Image (spheres, rainbow, N blue to C red):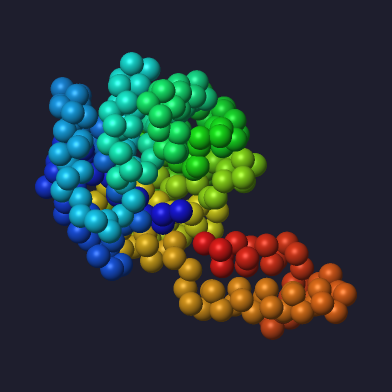
Length: 281
């Protein structure tokens, strides 16, 4: 699962090409070509019609390509889904904003109609209605990850989050619980709108990782290196996880259900599950 997902307006081939050419620590795990908020409403149809030309600017070996469709109405969502389906294997998935079970099912049906059964969906939850369906969305057969669109969600709830975002903690936790209940990996964290404040980005990303998030969306290339660093396990973390797994496996071989780690703490199945998950990521 990508640790950083960079939004790029779908009507800006120059930005798409630049984002696709980022390398090393600055390279996003995925690009989200945006047919929704990143494009003026009057330009969205032209952006959709120009997707094939925009993708032509993406070199081989570029990050995974996703497309966020315009789901203001079922009609715009289904038209966008059909256009994405026609793009072929260069596109690996669809981001469905304002996600509800009905909208996700409708988009999946449109993709199936075109023969694109392989295109999986990210459910971007932005409304109270979607929030109440988080578990059902996570269990939907075409959904591979959950994400929260917190600005839209806060507006829908009449919420005014402060600088520390503590008001959003319960909502973020719901997404983590629903993802686990649905057998998904950790959800994707929300964008940070102040892309110049990298210190705040780091702090909030670290908090999201501790909460169980697997990565974060970005709106500017300068955010990508920080997000990549925070959500990528360090070599020290990986080595500690390997040691815990080895200790526990040795204990099981001795017929013991738990053992003691190098720090004196008990190591049992619950502790090792997190270590195994860290190594699997």
